[in-house]
Image (cartoon, rainbow, N blue to C red; front, side, top):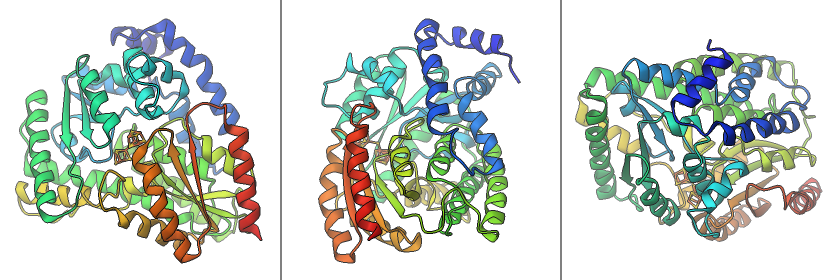
Length: 427
Ligand code: BJ8
């Protein structure tokens, strides 16, 4: 394990602004101590994930740095439509880059209009301010054409770092899946060029199994949350899912399965951090990049518990698996396209499958209500909220739509609305 001196030297070597980054180091431990640490009744095996998060800019970036020193390449990604399997099969490592903290927003403000969503601002700020080791260690960023904000932000970002942009079709017809297959082939070309490696059937088969196993572990974790009492808080489950975007996939899978063994025991003993009759909430909407725990914290300190996230930091990331039984490279790439095109992002039209998923989760997780979380200025998700509300009303499922950013300014206002919602669903 690298020492603090070695990690600091690595930050300097990869071009970080150490002084500005010290600002992040001064506030981040406080966020963890205030939101995650004081929770009662946490499982013991969450400790591994605590360590990953509390050393988030140290331990894992150092592994990526060592990988590069041995000639390997690192890919930074912003969206769950990017097939990690391909990057892994080419000897690369992929890592999430989405910014989830207010600290980086002012850096993004310098390049983007005020009415841009905080996830984009934070992601841009972390790169341009040189305060994220993940952004600095990556050799290539992979962006995607999903929402307008991201598409335009990539044009600005590509002046600073080599970027490969994937076009994501916005409908799900047969010809769109075919188009996405072609997009994956183009990514293969770019990644082959960068890594100097050729994609091989065996390596991709292994990559598919590795990433599927990560998804299987996350699905297992999620299923434990169907129990009452829940064996793990929503905040801790979300933190594990967030770690999945950064950690080594094989180690992550192993540690998540160890955690799940403990959660299974807890279910048998009917143990958990909240009483069995605590109101249960499914959260849906825009992703919550690390360390965005704002909504979960408000819900779980207002008398309810989050039992599932229909989100890209939730089921959209891990529910569907890639078919492992294709017999050649062409078949494997088609299998990837088929799997990724099942993701129900609001950039698609129509997107009624998302509402169907939310209704299914509300039933499977015995939820008392659904909270729809939209990051401010995200037109896609805030507009889709109307149809979601109607679909849930038809099913008699209580629904609350909230729009917010990464700051703390509206927290008390949100708390008042969440408490009122919980009161309604309790009665
Ligand atoms: S598949 S949700 S990760 S695009 S919140 S930046 S949509 S304005 S993150 Fe996303 Fe891929 Fe879709 Fe998922 Fe734009 Fe909205 Fe901001 Fe968003």
